[in-house]
Length: 62
Image 1: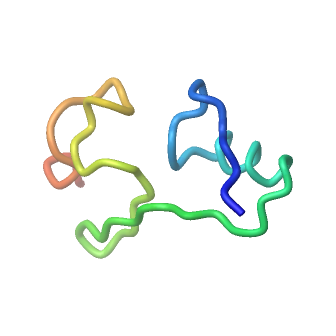
Image 2: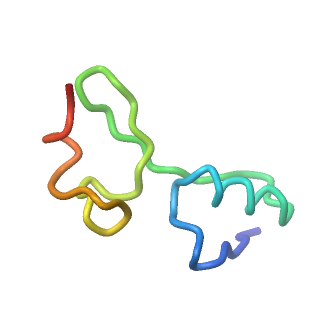
């Protein structure tokens, strides 16, 4: 059963996951990107909507 998480909780954050579990979710969907042999959990490949960064996650690697 889908659980609605408040809009104040940005997708794919620990806060959003905790709120979903607190509401009784039995599963959590998340987005994972593989970037330079690292796994990154973030909703969008571009940073502008959910962070204060800019550009693609692929441009911000070490």
